[in-house]
Length: 308
Image (cartoon, rainbow, N blue to C red; front, side):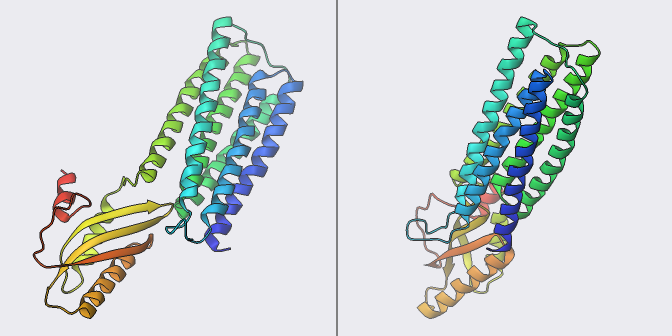
């Protein structure tokens, strides 16, 4: 197991165990101390155990090497996992909206008994904050959408636990209705995060690119190779944390096949050296001055036009 897989697995398992302990604690405290908010928070944390398991499974799948049916590798398993997480986050937010609205309409607000729900919620906020920072930093380091999505879900849990904490405090001083109002606001934020995760993963699954700077890096690297003319029809495909590049270049039509191949090899090496996330480059050689109808990919002119 390489270092990336080790760190990915460690972050996912950490989420499973920490969320498992928190969920069980909050459910028991909520049940025995009559706190519906803490009980609901415990159930919500229980869903995080599932999302961490989804992330863990996706990490195991994405670490598999390319094979006959998956020549680009299996890294998009993490993207699919992030998509699954977005649905879970959306469901949690929608459920919280429905529950909050029902409480507001029925005015079924109760006072929370005892101090243990308060202490448990404070511990939950602190633990979730640490877990969010750990998973988010790991996800950024590994360029893993699955870990980042899981971390964003942790951030939602901080808001949820914070709302529960506010509700517990206000409940003890008589403002019972504030718990439902605050929960309603947080649920809208949770649903917004779900849509953001869904949109981000959709870009990758549709071979879209948010950051076009990588195209400029490719053009700069290509132009640094002697004998290359008119780099065009450039396409970048993101597969997990890796990029795969297709590019057409023109060379002197009088060159031998061997020399043309050497130039293509130099172009490939220069592009990969420009960005360590680029796993492979396919270079197509054309004779200089070649004119074709090529609707796919970008050239320098199209890239510059997109920046305006």
